[in-house]
Amino acid sequence: MCRAAARFSCGTVDEFKPLSLNMFHLHISFLSKSRYGSAAKSLAYIARLGPFKKNKDRVRETISVMPSWAEGKQAVKYWALADSKSRANARMAYIVVAALPKALMPWQQSQLALEFADELSRLSAEGLTPHACVPYSLAIHEGYGRNPHFHLLLSASIDDQVKRLPDRWFRRYNRKNPSQGGSKRSRFMTRTPWLIEARKLWAHLANKALTSVGLPATLDHRSNAARNIAAPPGVHLGPAASYLISQNRMSPKVARSVALKKKYDVMQHLLESIDTRRQKVSWMEMEQALQEEQRRKWSASNQTEWVEILDEHPLAMDAKVARGAASIVVLQSNAGIIQSMHRLGLDQRQADVLSAVGTDWDWVQTQAGFWLVTPQSNEVIFLDVAVSTDATTTVGIRAALAAAQSRADHDPVVWAKSSVLAVVAEGMARLALKWPIKVLRDGAKHPLPKSS
Image (cartoon, rainbow, N blue to C red):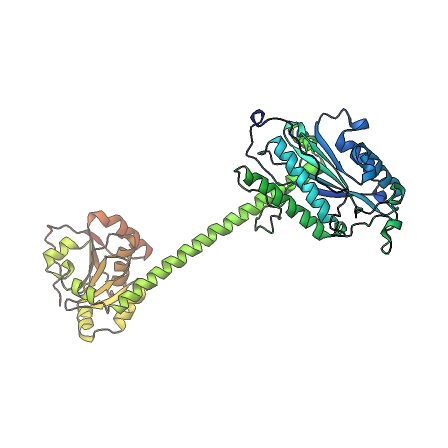
């Protein structure tokens, strides 16, 4: 008869302290004659009967829900008949093993295990009759105090509430006259959807039990792949395998676990490398987009702001002010080149200069003369009779030297302040220039050519 078995506690709430560690572990297998399985021996093992009495893993409680002729201690008779009367290729029973949440009290764990057994028993009966279920035996183990779990032995035959004698129970089912045949075998239990539903049911009931005592619902029956988790599924290592690991010894299961761990570590390293490269590419794309935006704004402003600033820039003032503002001045001996630039405006000389300094720089013409500016910096290069700049960075000074190189017909003289001499020397080495370098001092009396 299918019913909810009695529930009882193995201790008071004060005797136990809930733990926070919960893990999803549910394993299902089946017993068949072709695999030399035995339902009676399985019952003896999970209930610690006969040769298994001395097992140190204590059984907290054992519950069996059986037909009327096999109730109570007669459950042993039911499983023995399942072994002897089932067909040669038949599955006698299914075994479900699941880890109980450590955060629950023992009596709550027992209640949860029994609720799952009742629900799965009814689910496996395919709704044959309103109260149909499959007989089962449930044993809840202490797990040496560290790993509470239960073993559920489920029959493959459905109890449809039709009265049958024990010797007829495992015969072939008679659809037209059920009382004259054996109990119907569950086809649902032989299919993958049943396994999925069993796992889903356990996750649902366990999470409901956890939330009922104010704990988070942390159990998930889905695979790592279904949850978009890169880690491969782990290998359950029992006490024996754990002991081998502590002794530096290997077994097939331990070797498989170690191999999976190594594979996962390699995969994690690759994923982290990919993420790092993606971040770098993303930053480069963002920087490029900002530069494009700055250039767009620069073009949209029609250089008006720069023109206003450059007309009053110190480099365009008299020689004394220009010497104070300049970091380097490149004096060209052939001033006629500059004068021709003033006469012709934007000609091939401008294109040569822009090609030399790079695409980051823009050409601006004011009343004072010609300028090179960049939206990314406040540094400017003034192209007049001399090439002068207030730049102190490597990029700015190198651009000024490149601009002077593009227009030089004869070797010019480079005047540089002492603070940038090293940068100037490095820039000239990069450009393969061998121009003479002199120190530019604010109070020096060397001539600075007047603007044309």
